[in-house]
Length: 324
Image (spheres, rainbow, N blue to C red):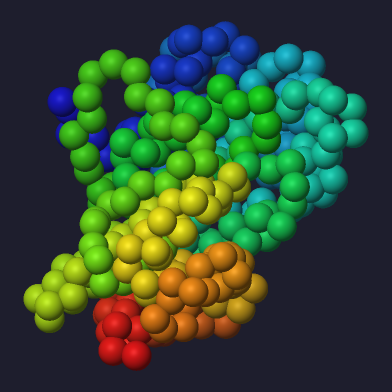
């Protein structure tokens, strides 16, 4: 077992897949000699060379289009966006090409879009977006959002081996903050399976990404008040593990949905609707939601803290649901 950071787990996954399959290659800005904005690809250029670790100009629409072309020609590109916010520059290529390739022509399009996302790092409004809901509305895309080093490594390896385009969200705040002992040997986590990170019987907190850790912190505090809350980590948003959600709600009879993205139009609304439709008879309280305020993410630390969800806000929402 080796203590591994979230960032190193992602780096290990890519390195192992590049060694396993020579079709895998990387594209992105400053990923070569510089090693990437967060140093995820440090040392890759020396090991794999410039034709498998390709530095791209600041033109996301261009190099994502290039990646899509290579994917349908049999290569497996892994694209790094320096920040998830800039994925918007390649929206057309992802939505109108990558997501529709299989439906239109019956061709595989094995491509992974790595998207460092989220706030809490004082990055301001252009480097702190949580844009997963932009893409969950698009058939043909898979959306993955891990919370631990083990899941990050196992899910990324599975994403690289998948025949579909996968958007792989990585919360920047977790890169060097979260460590976990990883076993030696192969780690693969299937896409589309949720995981109970903390069992409980009184309330289900449904979440993903960095909010898993804030939710566990809130649940531990609630335990001191006599409530045992289950924390269900979705891990994948598309495909979604509906049955894991419904099973948990059937046990606890209460549900709180938590995500860092803005509340209005966030993926939590879809989750709440599904729970309401499928588990209404099981509920003892309305489905509650916690998300970011509907404003751009501020640069000012006190303002950012006020906008983003955290363990204290999750605790308060959970308590209201438990006492309903």
